[in-house]
Length: 455
Ligand code: NAP
Image (cartoon, rainbow, N blue to C red; front, side, top):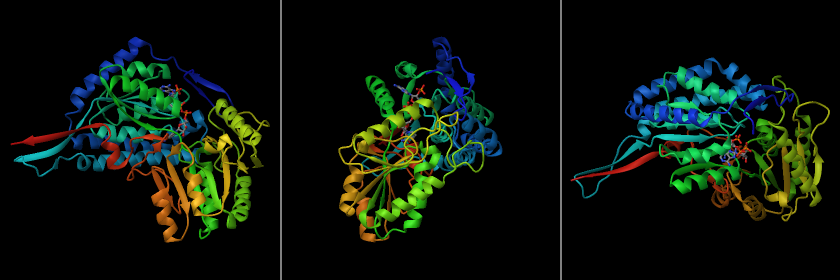
């Protein structure tokens, strides 16, 4: 895949970038290693001043950064602004809490003094996707750099200007040269990087094949990875739910980021007694969404990031239909305009053996399932290879406790949509990946947990 900016709203090629050659990659690795030697010894206090400065730059120039995101991957500008603000939040969160999260922990044993000490590992490689081009990177950068590691970013090939802008923010914030660098490289170079002794670990957010490929390359080298992969999150609505609130949130949770979010609600599982009403309201909400130029403030749904995503989504919908699904609205790419536009789509009548029932739709397509009761709802919710997030709606406390206990996912949100928050751990189980980002768990992923025993 060429490294280039192509405006998804128009299809116009705006800028291409030459990938780094092997000598240039080697230079960046040398620089990162040299930076680590000194940076690991710098105090939390000093790191935190730079991290706060990064937050300040993000906040002060949010419109400029948001514009780059919208231009490169098509998310509505207002959502891009919110994303930059969230990046500032995660920088501040770790600037304020890293010292406390990584403080020595004293443990009583047979020693005169024993404790656990956390130390940085060195160079961490981050392989990141285009869908939240700033947020995905900052939720890695903030804990990794505060812990004393240094970062190399291999960003998705369609968001090079975002990748370069982030490198510049970190430099301008005052971090020493080499502490965070963007590598403009293709995916094929990732395995080589993992085989370099100086690269100690990696994190990847993206598709299952990419995750499996990085895990295999890292496994050969016995290096740790964190993987944040796909999801087909259930959104369960039971009879006692506040239906209006559930449908409004369902629409937001499916359409966020033009439908291209790993934690978007993708499978709507509704009990039969309220299913007709839910379906009617959801249809109304979907059809009321304004599709258009992502730079316009009234746009709800912008273009998908690349023509390939449209092609894949279209094909998935057709497979679903061939296997018995019905299209309630949408169902075909929009051909009346340039750019990668796909309308809000609802699929119903999806039998358990329809292959798409198990798949992730990475675009504005909702699957609607009707179930007789909570048992059937939980069974369908768990009947996918994924286990990222789940949203469930009920006001009955017994039902709530069962949903929390029995849903197989990295997170369960009751009466709210799944979202990431710097204060809460984020990640999945099953084929959605392993490891956690954010919160205290996130900063503990890339450190040596050193046991110290002194007699
Ligand atoms: P993708 O193709 O896997 O790309 C993600 C990143 O991995 C890009 O930087 C890509 O580089 C790189 N990559 C691709 N193949 C690779 C390989 N074989 N080895 C090493 N790196 C490789 O993902 P996508 O299709 O753009 O993103 C959508 C997927 O990401 C969805 O499944 C979504 O659910 C998931 N996602 C998960 C989370 C989460 O937190 N769990 C968050 C966001 C997205 P190139 O661009 O150069 O190919």
